Amino acid sequence: MEQESFKEYDFQTSPIEPARDLLIAELGTVGFESFMETETGVLAYINSKDWFEAILEGVSILENPLFTFDYSIKTIEQQNWNADWEKNFDPITVEGQCQVRAPFHQKIDVPYDIEILPKMSFGTGHHQTTYMMLSYILENEFDQKSVLDMGSGTAVLAILAAYKGASKIQAIDIDSWCYENATENVERNNCSHIEVIQGDASSIKEQFDVILANINRNILLADIPTYVQHLNKGGSIYFSGFYLEDLDLIKEKCVENKLTFESYKQKDQWVSAKFVY
Image (cartoon, rainbow, N blue to C red):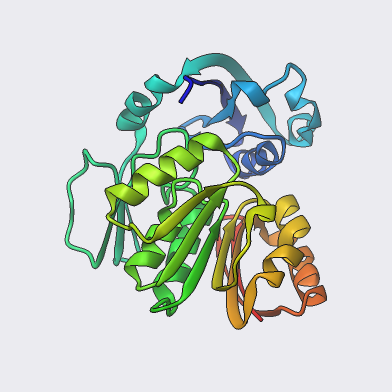
């Protein structure tokens, strides 16, 4: 695989919240794919091939008079990413049942232990949306279910679904490095029945009992009809990557596509929601 580079934006936000969360949400819509929260704001990463000089012009939160933002930019090579994560990535435990950790972290006694080397991929459990999606998987039945993890990032959701007994699993992400990283993490966790695919919603070819989609509001709204076409009757679909204020928009689109709202979780301003078909 050809060596890639990434642009790292080091944002200082004031006040920290909700400015940081609002910023992350908007950056996700213009192509930023990985985020690392810091004491003063957030580090945001975008593949250099997707970056252009005026990329922040469409990020309206930066013009909001209620907040102040400062940032610096640098280019980092991919091989430096692991070292950065080793300095900043702490293990997390979800609902006392699932630990997400890097290989260099101590393993603890929990039912589900997931080893992730995130590299440039989104999905370590630290972000509120990933945490809530992991929580939903822990709470619900996955035994012998067919599962699609859409926008899979590190494939951490697919891996937990496998540990919970899912029989057929696909993990799809449009980003080439997410594809490579998900493949590595699937092997690392001995989940050989997870099929990793590089692509977008048009890559979905099969039917599933469960669909997991932790992406962002705009992509979800555009792709919900496609997801429903590939969801078995009686199946469940879990969405995240949006704010509480966007939940009504998601509900409306789901109702249009014959999905029934069942529940939602909130962590800070972020939301995950469950719908059934």
